[in-house]
Length: 456
Image (cartoon, rainbow, N blue to C red; front, side, top):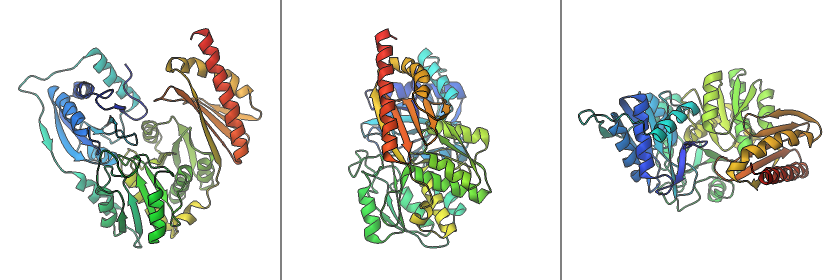
């Protein structure tokens, strides 16, 4: 039974992610980890209380105590899991997905997302119904408590700005709506907040912040003459940056610039990113005296490699950054604060901070592929892809197939959420990126047809 995707368990609420499933997963957690406190939070989605009640009942049925901290961003829940010494943490969220979705994401006592092997243990207990029910005298307790102040206090005491920054924030009616403006103001910033009332229907904009969904933020930064703008997704584990001109900063560029800053400020060090990341990340970090290692797509893999390798920073090119000095979960609010701190220390405007990063052209395509054919198609592509291009320098196969060419790269990766195989190509020129992506799409479609005919 496969329940977990790249970032927890997700599905359409009350259809795929049902109260029955939440109950079973809630029972599995203390069945594996024993009695103690299990922290629970949620984002603004309308189905959050439904899933929370079912999950809480499951935890208590198997002897765990639930401490419900209410509406909090995912990063805050992870931070509090460690801060309060909980056995594990759970946030009910579907992150940047549309409002009809919801999900469950779990954290270890050290604040990292559950590692893949720990996720598999939960799946096995749920599948076998191997729950360790408590006797009626030993069922767990439920308590509700406001604890987000601990996060605000910790960050506002750890960070200090030399100048008064004028910041525009767009939480998108998500779980950062109140907390993000509060913490920026606690640090002395002049804050203008848009879409800062929690609403699980996300009426202001799509919960996924992208160039096409944060145009209001771009406009407000320009109109107000603000220094910088930040937007968050539904649970604020991702953030996007708008510079002082009102321009959206590309995800890879923001990641590369901050990773290079970290390497410079630490005198080197290891940066973790994923196989989807632009070559600009490696170039910027290496020029700053650091080095980059790639891992599989998903913040759980970034977090795990940071822990295993002692990295100073890690992030995905979707705005999900992990700052291990504070905790081990992707945290958009924290990411925006440490980025502002970098600007503050270097005395630069955002456009100046990001300007040195080389820009590449990225083309994305996808091919429809039934889930049951994905593995066979990828096996065919492993043989055909490298021989179809000249000047191949390396093949990285830790998550799909990434082909490093002399002047470009291409990644072929089966989607973890849709019946498609995704293609990402990057080169200095748009024409070259399009050429590589189109050629790869032909090869992918050919492989899918081949394995389909053979009945794999």
